[in-house]
Image (cartoon, rainbow, N blue to C red; front, side, top):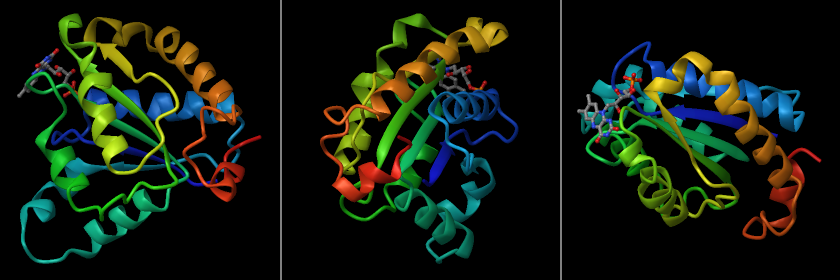
Length: 182
Ligand SMILES: Cc1cc2nc3c(=O)[nH]c(=O)nc-3n(C[C@H](O)[C@H](O)[C@H](O)COP(=O)(O)O)c2cc1C
């Protein structure tokens, strides 16, 4: 079971990175993913992503993402959507590059007015790439960062429940669904 957390903040050491790590931990615990997860922090790839020359680090990250069985995609909310950096990275994936991946969208934001952006903007991007998105996305408000556990745990439990639901994973091939935790 390959579980990857992708973080689309251009700023190194961001709160979004902290939230994504905590969310991945909570999901691995709730879903019994003993192998844990790998994290891809796009802030360290931001320069390479904007250059025309191929970069081994970007290729490696792209391969990790396309081969993931479960992919958490976390971004700060910028201008009511996600970051340009996340889009620049995802634009490099092949057509339906997330076919066979269960994706979990997460946005960190300042304003509750943009809470729906996670399902209105980030979810369709992942679906366009071929991912199955079994749960509602998670919007984490800056004001909730001090009580992250209380926000993440219910979502992680819901993710774990849905990962066991064949209907929720109907878009996956049987062998791909089988790779997810029982
Ligand atoms: C360029 C930019 C645009 C932003 N646009 C929004 C926005 O539209 N809605 C919102 O709720 N927060 C917006 N924010 C606030 C960030 O989403 C919020 O501060 C988030 O916590 C940043 O993540 P970080 O703490 O990991 O850097 C914006 C921040 C920046 C820098």
